Length: 479
Image (tube, rainbow, N blue to C red; front, side, top):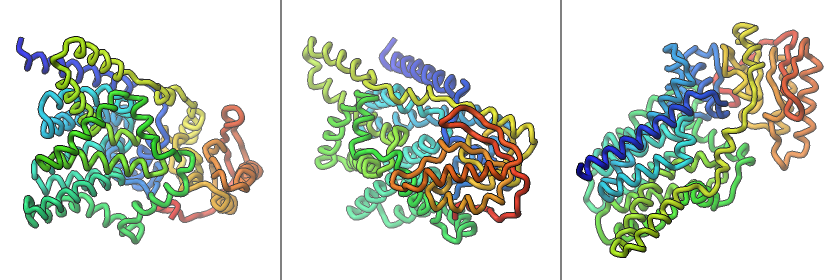
């Protein structure tokens, strides 16, 4: 059996193993993340004509469209969506292989794919119904097509990436700079740049037109997302070095990316321009994400494909340096094995946190369809059953001013699903906690029935009110 056949067998076993893990995690019962619930319910809103679900105007539309189409087709949206997300993750690995092969060769490509396949953050978030992996797939395809000088399609997939997740603008900026540099050096024509721009605008134009109709501003969701991030991200503020620390702790192997980055940067100066792409994209992504105050481990997955490629390149360089020394080779293999083991497993602790929302779902089923006067403090409360949220108490932000507005609008509420733990107050808003409790008491005082769910301090309430007044709250909420 030659080495080529052996490599394919090993790669096949690795792919099957990882797919099995992703599918197992996708179909096993577990609680969705907050954002996953929002995308599922936005999909229902879109495909029910606004009869069910909810709407958040700051969210991109690609993921809600995908999940809404699954729901409309009659498939179980959560399981089907997670299986689709698992397949998307495997497609990411395939594109990483192609990119690494284009940049450094087949041996490094196999290593890069293997490193990404076994990266804990990538596996953990590989079947979630969120935008990180789908947008990552689009942007990676765009980078690969850019290297192949397929200008129109590179622009198209870049546009799809941005329409899926706004932070793909960093990839767009990197490729835009590389395209302008190629044009300046006469390695790309004006026609090439125009083709890329047309491809970029093709998926964005319908989205921008819809925004113009709904919000009178084609870029409203983009700027609104920036505003919301500035006012609501305080629980997730972390220092500049957060991603560097978390990535190294969860996958120490990525330390070799420093060697790979240095070598790529050097080659970008001395040799082919294609090395400039991996160096620039990695530097821009890492710097941009590190400068953004709102940091979560799941956002770091955007960096992992490039770090996997650079780590594979760095390890190859290190190994080639000591390959003639037997003892050193053995020590090197041991070091790699050790570096493959996560130092910290705090990411896995999130999976252990489960909260029971079944009482809210049973209430929705008991009442049939709830399509009028429903207020919620958490999208997970209405994940099961058919209901429409008329007021998102947490959106677009939660502070004293927002609570005062909600208190004045209580006569419009007919049914309220609320827990004060869903509505944390900003640390510098000292009057917020008291006003939040006052809002809950006002809701209770005007109720005809109250159901208490769970225990303090995070007790939940289903509050039924006698009468809901007419109200106007079409898309967008919070505008």
